[in-house]
Image (cartoon, rainbow, N blue to C red; front, side, top):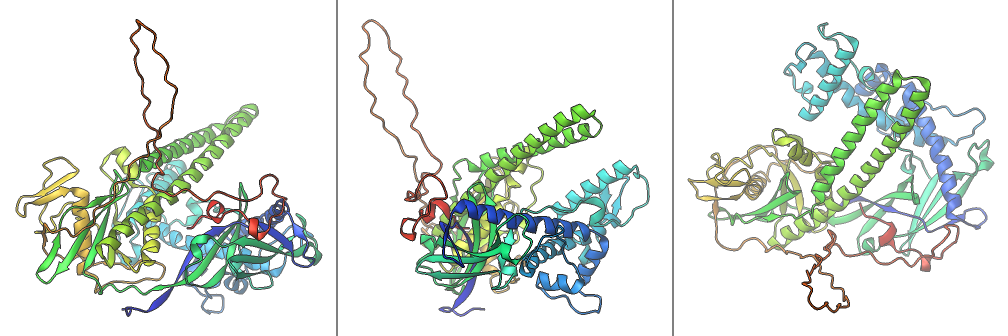
Length: 604
């Protein structure tokens, strides 16, 4: 338990872009286009070496070593990926004649070992599921030990892979064999990036003074460096985003270098001091329920000496139609994937001239699918932080100390139709939980995960099954005579479970606090106003002065009035205009004339 008034460190991430570059040895200014080329050469070297190393280690023996966590001499493997790779003898190879510093090799091995360690869990799960898989029925047997339990969604995906493999090999009635991840999947491919935090000061270092971040990194001067003279230090200068100027940041961490369509992007991280959360300090909780129709709904429960009370009037988040757009984009991406897979199967047996044409179509489909994925990622992020801001403002106005959200690992989206299942299975909910936890920590509110089973079906007062007199979206309890929107009733149940289980919170590193025990206490309806009145922003109406035309005599005019234009971003403040230099990116700018951080730096 934490003590009120104390502060705790918290890490967060944000993105940044350099507006100037200087050669560290000669102090000569460099153009940003030149920096883009050098960073691309660095990422090409790292990406090729990482792919070659992962492909060479793609065998069951590698995952056996990672699962055991011991090297050849029985010593425990260290947490640092590059140290573990050096102890196991996993070294990348480069093209003949190419010189790469040892610190860059550290970045390669750290990223490769991190990827393989993540897949070690999947290898164990696939081995357990394949041993219990029946090729005849296409089902898996029930687990016998706790170690064999895996999430239901992941199990369904593995069962589909096992069924497709059994059909392809013609072993539909053969005996069950224990498969590994190397038998059912190919080596993964990762986006080109350079995690500078895996190296030391010989490769990169960072300094922050007067709201200006200076990153010194060693970059190659040619695509195939042959010696140390082809690696030179460069200082990348970037402005700190304005929303970080007033925060108590105690440490700045080395960023990750990536390239996008705009050039070099720095994925930075920092540590700040925030107020220590105290779950026992307040007597009010907010419950957030996920909904297929919208992203989520919230309700408030207050603890009094005479019991728990709630007004059963919740707050429904208005996503301005972005949820439907995400569902459409996801369906479009799935359609493109199926079409590309079908063309791939046709190209395997097609004549050479037809195969060339099909491969061109497949490349177009893959590019279109990648663009759809990028668009979904942007909408997910904007929707998640917009939702988090509204929920945190709602909780802060009510004086809540804890926000209870549904545990996403227990959220099953089945039996509600193809459209609703697709809407509920969006990655926006995972991003919304992270954004909500980050935003709530800034005001001293703790986000906890509570069990989701029965929250929409049970009465918060008597714990009996609710009836649906008005359809699926309505709930009513004849005994307690309470009800309303089913999402609001579920929010009351979630807030109740967060209040009752806050003294038995399970904390795991890298995860939000969890409440695993479901307790019941009657929540009676109180007519006192306990929840804030949510704001209802309206769309802006755009008036345009149009010269009136003189109607002709004797003609009946039909007046057509266009509808007012509305934007889904009416509640989002527009970014500050950029004052940077337009034109070629080789034109150097001074710190005073750097582009606005709100335009090029997006907070994560």
